[in-house]
Image (cartoon, rainbow, N blue to C red; front, side, top):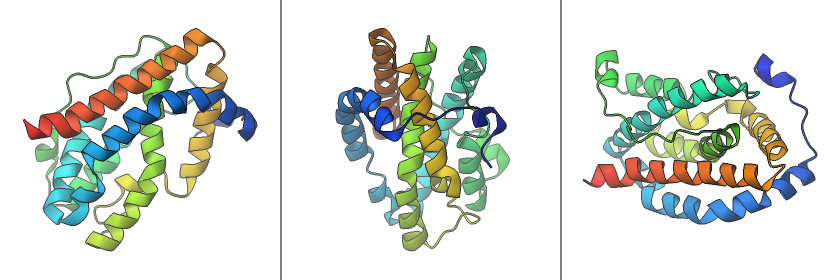
Length: 211
């Protein structure tokens, strides 16, 4: 079920959403493509060890990131159920299925250079990255299920995202995002928030791992 706090969101027509978000996509696509290439999630799914390592790194990113974004979503009254959209509990569930204890999960390294949005627009830009990753995760989930033989209850719940509601929640988010693109200043803040998040993701999933 869609969270109650999101029911009141009146969706914009799909054509209008695409028009308003065209510049955001254009400005952020190079960062998205570079991060996708460097992180190489599919490449990390070739073995159990690689998958577990990926999950631990993802948890270290999402847990502090979502804690920060939950605060700003509440502070600015953005029309999202931040708790219902959190992915770190799903990653923790997958890690437990892989044999990690709660203590071991709590002891995992965390991202410290967290994007800290200073406006609602910037916060939406940050969320654009993680909500988009949730949509793209549906494809990754099939790799995990077919390649490693894992299902939602045995270590592959994170990439399943919102399950059957993933598409509808993405459309809800894009409609809110498009509504915020009402001025050049707001749009620039959204783009900046998204780029900051892509860079933080790259630092944590690629650079920190290699150091």
